[in-house]
Image 1 (cartoon, rainbow, N blue to C red):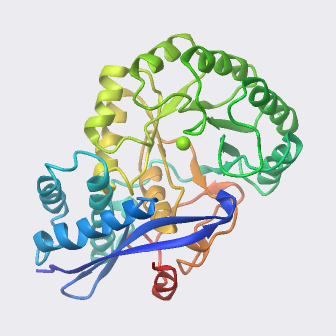
Image 2 (cartoon, rainbow, N blue to C red; image 1 turned 180 degrees about the vertical axis):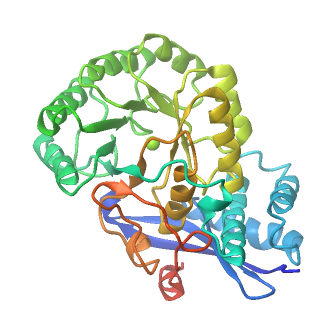
Length: 375
Ligand SMILES: [Mg+2]
């Protein structure tokens, strides 16, 4: 029987042109089996101290309980990790640590059986998904911000998701008139068919009435969804927003567990589109539990894949095998963790995201690049 022989967490750092050249961080996980199969996963901890904590949990907490565990008994490994972390992590850092190991074990399962992951998830529910450019609005002046998004569509993308109030030179993100005017200008520049998804995000501090007002002003320009205008745990705020806004609401990327999504879907009942990140939500196993909940409740799932090609690959397999997805997100600007980290860049063709057919995650991680980016 093939067993887990080694688990190595590898914190990395890289400059990201998609985030105004900021140094971003994450933790990769390399799992090796007793017969030499290597699987890769990711824990999207981002902050340096959180990356160190995730790496410690994996090395000092999870590896001792998973060493010699059968590599194909993924569900048991997942349960073992959750039980181990029960006191310090229903969600949070522990969930991210679980994510990376779980993802790597799925990669190993696919490689051992010579099957791409989407086949292990029951096969393709979409032959392809529209490619979405997920970007941060960070140029100086509205005209430059509009021109940048127009460029994404000229490059083939079929929709855009725009993060407001990010790092950079833009004032878009916070002042309602400025933000609504930007969406109006964008709609005029892009025409009526282009998908425009608005991600208000953590940098904006609006009260509920402002969020409602902006939602309904943007609704006139036919936005596809309106993401996280309020703090994610403001249940009453989201309920009021859902009752009064004429746009679909998106949230969820800051949940960690199936229980958190269940609470949203069954008790808060305000969100239609759920962001789910396999590098955060207790891995591929956790993502599939959330996806099943979304099927049960008729909700949309959107894979959050704004990190390395390892998470992008996992998100792509999961998205194409899910009945609940509409689009697939790409970072529009070239970045080493997408282009250099794997032998072949995961990229759209004519504005569509297609399946990866190689075994497991379907990527060839370049270990020399991993070692060069390691902190
Ligand atoms: Mg978001």
